Structure formats: structure tokens, C-alpha cells
Image (cartoon, rainbow, N blue to C red; front, side, top):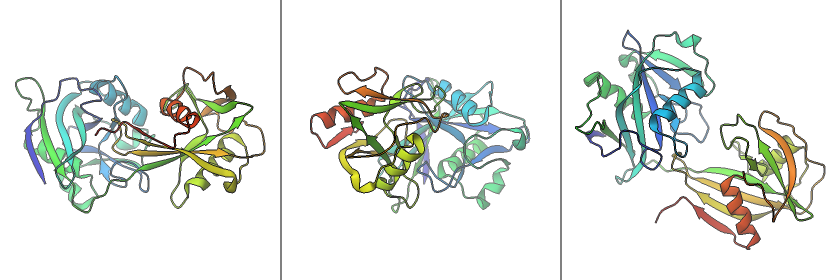
Length: 317
């Protein structure tokens, strides 16, 4: 179900108003550049064809975000991108779940010449072909509106129109589960400095952590991440849950459950085994943590020190 109505969004929306952006790229033959997303991953509309794009980072405008996302995902720089449409996704009860500002641009380049760093495939697609493809519903709505009105239809304030897409009643929101290790030795906690080019928290310190893989328990994930990232060996029976952080970020459609485990014992010394992700491991005194520390990790470590087992972050009443 879709409808179109004016939207009260600023012309340069920031994170609080528009969590995400997307690019409607059209060639001179009237085809759309579609992106096949990874399946079996905790991402928006996994395994479907959709538009390139992603979530805003703190303090970032929509124009800055879509330019960065295109650069990171494909290396493309597309001049002349203009706000075209806002897509709002509602749940079955009508509650707003996600908002994406779509920018329109022209691109004439063979899909096979565009490097793809995220997802499975890029494809130039005619509108009539989409009915035979597994499509993201929001992308279908955008293409439909572009077929009706090829040029933006902003209101008097320059704000683009809005298309609303309603999820069916069977949809259930999922959460990304993260496993984190709190290894403490002589009053110091093990932290790794993330690579300067890391998509998340570059050049920032963080505990050993990762997302569980399909079919993997969170404990098994923690054990695997310790081995893969640091070379440290831990047995699952030596891990205990010390904190749960329930997190919602404005730039992500999925909430995150961050589980922190303490280890009663382990073997080995930390080594840099994934230099493309982490450049250094260091033991930091708990009373002198680095300034550039992942914020939710800082909050969790403080809560653990206070004996608190649960924290909510980013949720509103």
C-alpha cells in the first residue's frame, strides 16, 4: 500500500529526520541501476533488488551521505544529484519505521565496469523487468513514482513529496546481535584500535567484538571472534554474561542487542591477526580509558563497574 503526500522535511535533512538516503540512478535509455543486496544478513530487505544508499552518520547531511555511500559502495561520483522523493516505511499498525530520502541522478556507464564493494550485483533494469524480480517494496514505489513524474515535485518550501509503504501484518522486526569480550588483567581491559579506514568507528578503540553468523550462538561467536581477532583461546564455559545493551541507532533500521561477556580465564597473548580491521591491541587501565573509545562500549564498561546488568541506548518512550 502506498500513498503520496507532502512531507515536512528540511531541504538538508540530518540524522534526526532522515535515517537513510538512496540514489535513483537513471541512464539515457530510461533504465535504473539496481543493486542486489546480500541475503541471510541482518540488513534492510536482504536478498532483494533495491537502490544504492545507506544510513546517515552523525552530523551528516543527506547530500553528504549519498555522496559518501556511492563512493564507498561503488567508487562512483555522480554530479547533479537532486532530492527526488522521500520513502517512509510504516508497520502494519501505521507506525513509522524508517525514512529514506531518495536522490535522482543520471549515469551512463556499463554495470560491469562499476566496482561493487558491497552486495552481490549491479544491473541496469527496465521498469517492466522489475515485476519478475524480487524487489524491495520501497524501490518499487520510487520507480513507479518516477514513471509517473520523472522530475521532482517539491512543495513551496523545496521539500520533495513522500511515498509511504506499509509492511504487511506478518512482518516482524529483527535485531542484530553483537558479542563483546571484556578481558580484564591486573585492572586493565583489552582494547583494539580500529583501522583508520574502518566503516565503523575508524581509529577508535573497542573491545574484541563481532556479529554472530547464521546458525551460531552468541557464546560461540565470542569464542570465534577472540580467536580470529586476537589469537586468544577461550572456552565457552569460561564466559559469563556481564552486561546487555539494547541499542537503537537513528541511522539503522535494525535495533542491536550488544552482549558483553567476561572471561574467567583464557590462554595466549593478543596479536593483530586482522590488520585491515585492527591496528593495535593494548591493555588500558579501567580508570584511564582512551578518549577515542566506542561510545556504547564506554557506557557498557561504566555500567559493568557499577554492577548494572542492562542498559537501553537510543530508545524513546
